[in-house]
Image 1 (cartoon, rainbow, N blue to C red):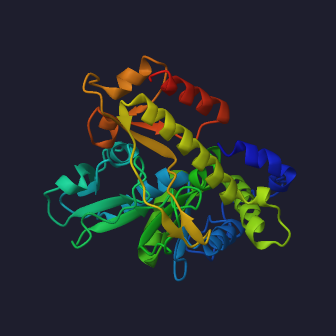
Image 2: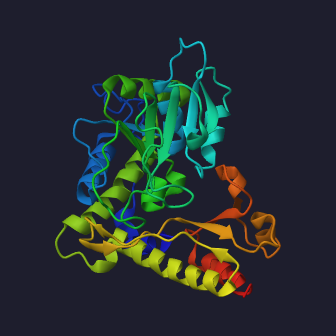
Image 3: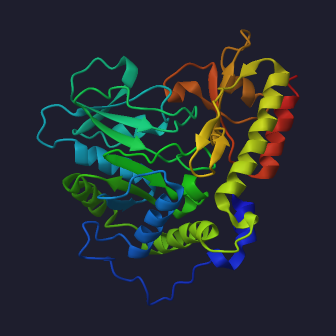
Length: 352
């Protein structure tokens, strides 16, 4: 979806790394996260300051191979290797479909997937994954088990101005972000965590050290350049409106959501979530929510499985079953290329 912006930016986002540079494992041996490239850390903090989406003071930055590795690292850091039973990992349904697989894939004796946080009846031995704005439905969330003694990881992948109004800087013990959702560069495979507790940050770093012996310096350098281009668009004087990434992304998503809502309403067979307009501290105006995914509910009682139904008209979706709910829901990506999104709207419009 963001490819046209980066094509227009051109060489200002290009990175050249000579063959003799970035050869060591180490980036900064003095840092708790010794494989964190200083230029990436600086640009990530700079962008948070500009956007105002997270508290960064007195936080440790841990870089990872996307937020997926950071979720693994956080579960490892929060669980106890000496516990008799693995800690339960929970998240309120509909939850991100990868959470269950991330929790159970390694068959760890330290943690295990326990499903919907709202339905969890266990003790205080739990880790709640809180995705806000939520994937798949775009809802702003707080911890369901917020008043209990368990531990929490806040997945903030979509808390950027193109998707959601910036209310207040998020202030949680562990907050996860990823370049793939912030800028569109999913293939760069870079995410970062803002961690309040030094010991938890150290354990997360240790997991990544043992898992991949650090994180690609080349990817960090590219990610730093990408974040710098975005930040420069808002801090340097004389920058044209077309060079402001979050304005570009928000305008594009607003147009796509308008077209999708028109097509869905005309069909009369499905419904979409409604989001209130809220004041955005970044844009300094009231703004609506435009999630990166559409959470579609079937209102036609003759359709038993919405994913199967859409497949018959060559629309690929992800079933609500993968998100802890029923087959009357599907998730549809709003972030494909323009040509593919046009085809999606055309095929939905044929359902009128």
